[in-house]
Length: 176
Image (cartoon, rainbow, N blue to C red; front, top):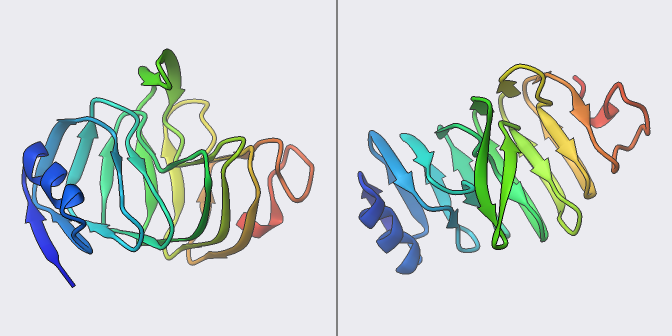
């Protein structure tokens, strides 16, 4: 297992390029473009303030004790197996412009967003899922999510076209 501690954008990019299996962020890293974690990588610690879309997760990623600022969150637009978050899955902020597939797009501070074409076979969040931003849902499901294990609560609405319950009140899998 390759474990790496990073404290700047260059170190973070190098750790990802060299396929480190565990990356610990020390302090605050600002201005990073969006990152894609290789399969099986654990990202933990620190604060990431992105200049792009945030963290793109792949199969078997673990997010532990990690915070982001602005409209960054795990953005899922392709199928993946298991997503494990040790601690809370939380974001804070408002709406901001980000480059998405070559188009400037307004993105909101949503803690977990599964886009059309994306899916999660198994989601485990040991803590809470929450969004600190006026009028934003905590969870947006426009792609399917299989098994959900939630250690805390969802603080904020659960919305989207792929809800199990089919009601605007949310999805019972995200209740405790």
